[in-house]
Length: 116
Length: 108
Image 1 (cartoon, rainbow over the protein chains, first blue to last red):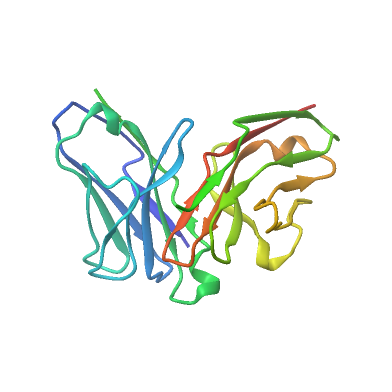
Image 2 (image 1 turned 180 degrees about the vertical axis):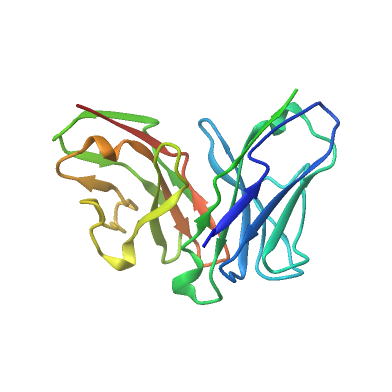
């Protein structure tokens, strides 16, 4: 049982380049999230999804786009990378609409992105 | 606005000493609070939640609505407790609000 899988694990980009981070979960979870983790800033929510075909903005959505075409996958895109997007990105998922379950988030291992 | 504050970036203790990681929140409704932990080279994972009122790995946390706090405590720290700890708040929407985290270092 892989849980939440993020690809790639590491990436170096030049300013202006684009890339897509993939998050895949095999737990049939409804909710999925993308966070960035920066020193002294903690975890900040970029975008999230409450189900297939839905997305919503989080705290820091600018410069990112997301898609949830399949329930198990949540893609995070950077159209034109900037040095300020250098960070560690985490994907998470959680269970269904039950209030008890939805706040237990399961995290991926992270993607370390450097934008030069 | 909802906010979670963890005032200490780093907390260093010796093995066997008591530990208290502070967490304060601001939320006008009835909050649900969590502690998540990230051990070295491992994924972030749920440690405990206030509604469960349980002790995990010797850690406990009590919700104090009067002081708007949810401090994490352990009477005797172990070296394996060294990790990054995040306090999180659910404001009854579809997401969690995380604090900035406290790194706990337990020296032998």
